[in-house]
Length: 132
Ligand code: C2G
Image 1 (cartoon, helix red, strand yellow):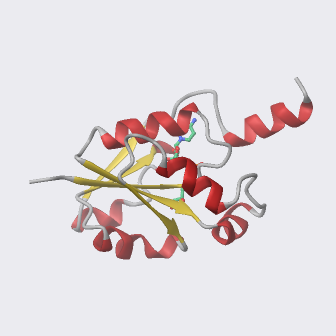
Image 2: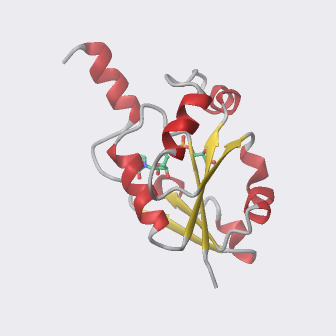
């Protein structure tokens, strides 16, 4: 039987940390579905607009070889619905979210993967805007 993995993220200013988590998530099953957070969700969550729009972020993630399907994550509160809608067997998140999604262990496996060290969208934005 085929195993569906689901993961979520903003994936703004796409970098190798994003790629690694997507590759490792895909390796846990046969089909990887990725929820890419909506611009509006980002404004609510981080108080700033992403550098790349949700359409651009979706296009980048959808073009990756390990990704089978993408959708727009409209709300953090809809995780259970998304897991059910995509019939996910495994929910994968980076360990910055450790423990936060344990409530879904009743409907799927929940796996937290170690983040790739020393790289983040925020650090990249600072580096680029600082010019060093
Ligand atoms: N990530 C990673 N290593 C990094 C940076 C990010 O493994 N150096 C992982 C994060 O842990 C996450 C994914 O890449 O699993 C996407 O990261 P973000 O774009 O920062 O996602 P976030 O804003 O945390 O959105 O519903 C949950 C949210 O949509 C998650």
